[in-house]
Length: 304
Image 1 (cartoon, one colour):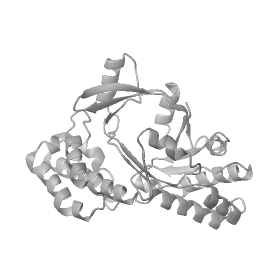
Image 2: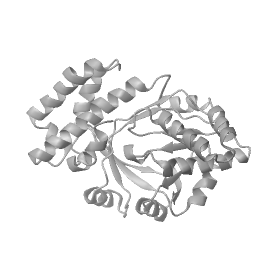
Image 3: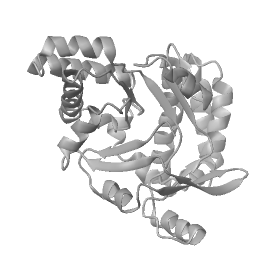
């Protein structure tokens, strides 16, 4: 009961409007080796589109009840528009004399929190927004931009998934998703409210002083293997990741890529176990993860 989410899209209106029509409710099919089941998610209480409802988003950032901002954006979406929106909201909050926020990046960019903080601070100093230097000092002293790593495979929604939701639930859910049972969230021990560490740890989040070993392993094992699988699959005429990993030469390629090429360079202590878990996750047929979806923007993803 402590948390509720205002979901903000930067430009695209489709998902925000769909969730609004469904009162923020949507179903997720969670699939593992033991089978699949549907879970109803009810944490989203409102949605906005920043390009269409900018004032509402700024007011939400500045609301006394707001405690966290989380971001899940693509590698190429860390741009001026995002920083300007955050800085405007934080400036309004600072001017009202309110407490700082935790602004947590939950995406695949390396050093995501640090990069976001640097981008916001640069904008404050450049534009002098809200008495520039003073706002910058407040952000540095009262807001936290922790680095974090989130690991869970969530394929894009497909007509087949929506049809499965219709069959299982007996209702039309245009936001239904499918995912795996595995999840891992590792976040840096840097919060605006230190008591949040206990709340996060209590539900299985890993709070650490240094996210880099986990982030590096995820990017260079899961994401790199995914991109390799997607490119191989596209050439071989295979449609999904599980179809790719079912081919013995492809599976051996991924196994050796992790074991021989990347694993020895990583600081994560359990690389072999993580590798074996990855191979099992890739083989999950219920995800039906499209190789073409993964291969999109490979030129942006691979450098990361």
